Length: 223
Length: 136
Image (cartoon, rainbow over all chains, first blue to last red; front, top):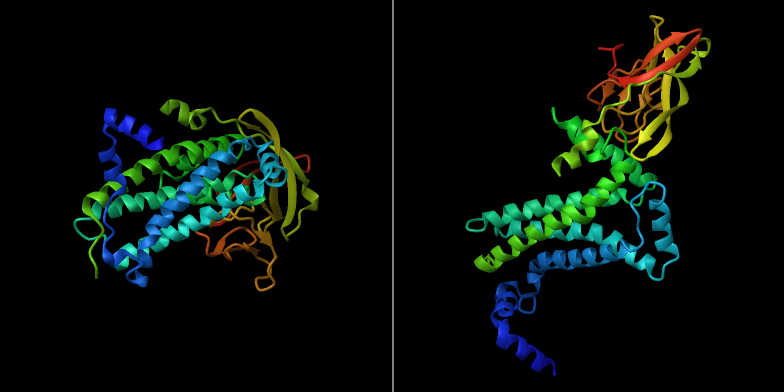
């Protein structure tokens, strides 16, 4: 049955080469932990992506209950955390996953650095990876404010002070992020928009570039 | 859409108004903490913010009202809150320290900001937060 459906579509659109391109590729022996256990260090990039997928899914579900408004944000988080079935789990996934994604990304960066994989011809992929790093930090920063509790509020105040310390442009950057002169209603909606729409869009575009490049160039050779 | 996004920084700022905070006769040489409320417009909300000022009369007889927001990274400093540093402002976050007039002694790059101050009928009124003018 499923095979018939697949064949029916494949006859018309010729999709087999597309998913072959995406999924069907050799894993060299030196990066396969089944051959050399120490090759597990090559898994961190994939783990980063895996957790990123979890972040996107859990985040999508969180927005079913969350409202980015200074009066209701905290209450909506408290409600989804305490009243909604599995709310604690879903929010927990997003909360802990946020830290884990940074950890995995850091380990991945270390692996790339110490295996020298950033060298020619893969310099551009290193640069894209660094951009992903900064987008991830931005996601962490903007997501931190959303629960609108004391920790979120004061952490954001301090971060905006850091933005403020940029030479010349600091005050403008701060006010732009803040959406006004104080951390308030407009800061929360702004951070929400950046966290949920702007940065994920940038992240996905960068990830596509990262993956296309690794497929074009292949995994770097053994040490 | 760009104009839409940057609208908050192009809106006209409200003129800072002065708020009655404390009686001049109660101000001592040691800084004291005062709280006062300020009405503010926050997008589609009107709210009141509670602000804090540390006020003292310095050796030249000037009233100095300092904002407790640390000039390092924006935590709240306190007066005499660390027994290793008596008679100083100390920031619990990264150990920035200031003199009673707000001069930065450690960690922080600039002196504490102060409030614009005016005195009428024995009362101290505080206005906008401005860079420190008392210390160099």
